[in-house]
Length: 262
Ligand SMILES: Nc1ncnc2c1ncn2[C@@H]1O[C@H](COP(=O)(O)OP(=O)(O)O)[C@@H](O)[C@H]1O
Ligand SMILES: [Mg+2]
Image (cartoon, rainbow, N blue to C red; front, side, top):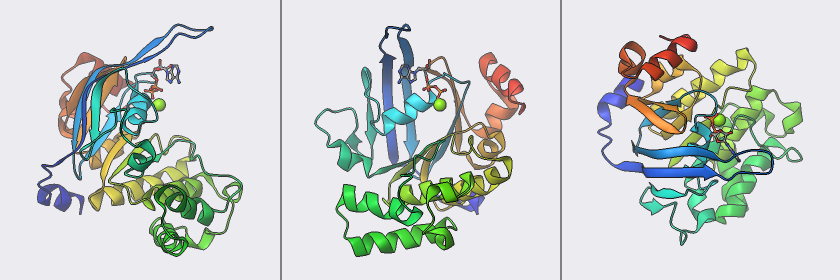
């Protein structure tokens, strides 16, 4: 199915265009500043799955957060489906409805049921009617296999179940792009596979995805392209075949040998 998608989709339309982005976190009382993104450029086509790998602190989360305008940039530009994220005139709440984000720690509202977690954002942010939001919640909770637990609170659910709810919540906004930041890193080993399978299915359905993960088998199987970041810069962008068999950069080779996928 994935191969069919890859062969069949002549994905030529650009979805995300990141050009020469710079990001610095200012110095604070207890630490120096960080140059978190250095001249980062990356273009993601519609329907493409880009997996970002790299050591801790290399800027992966910062890059995802700038795509969703959760962080400002200090230079360069980012466009998502033709809308400039970095232009101060852009209406960010409206923009963010186009980009779904899934975090390592789920970030669900703990005082609300799973169902309410999924129903609320489209009503609050997009002005969708209650009936339409409830219909969408049922659809996407079913999509992630959680309809039977819709009325549980997050504390009553396992990590894997909470992450499925978080994915349903993002999908209910009907985003054009999904960003995943180590979505399986906080899960028990037995829950990881199910969430990765769900992500694989979304990719197979043609969702445009940027995925930060340490799951190299996912990168190998699902990525159209793999980006290796180190020290705030993109070191290498290749197909999974190229990067895992024949990485160009020594830094990439060293990282891959450390994470056990070379
Ligand atoms: N909110 C922040 N304030 C200051 N420094 C930060 C902040 N977030 C991240 N950093 C720093 O920016 C660098 C990149 O971090 P991050 O994007 O989280 O990397 P990764 O996701 O690859 O681990 C690190 O040196 C980190 O300490
Ligand atoms: Mg991170």
